[in-house]
Image 1 (cartoon, rainbow, N blue to C red):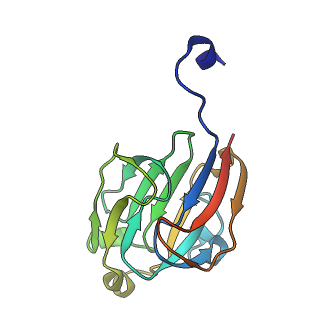
Image 2 (image 1 turned 30 degrees about the horizontal axis):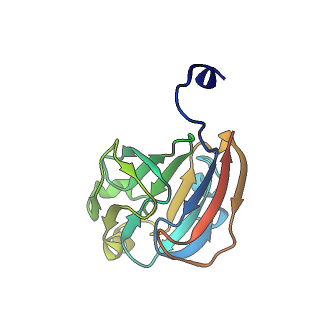
Length: 166
């Protein structure tokens, strides 16, 4: 209300589309082999069983957090949507080995922009799983969320989630 009153910027679109950040096979969140993700303790989302080691931005927004261990990146859209792209399971213990981050916190990104690369074979051999959770960490602030019924997905192209923020 006050923003409109005092002309402090345009109305933010509450609708977002989340695209596939990784090429591979779609995995339902309940099927991710980790209870923290499967039981939606961190939020709603989905997983990807990757067939290649490049991650692109699934949304238009800003890089909010690059984890020091390089295994995960937090993104934030202008409408408040917060997304965690987590590569593999139990990959924090790899301490950055096998990962190459291509962005920094504060960078503005668009759908399809490269975020990081990872060594798929190294992660297969050294982590619990390569299945990569994509989590809406503030899904309690959404008014609607629709996850598409998809199988094979292509990074930056396949639409996975329609979400409307409160």
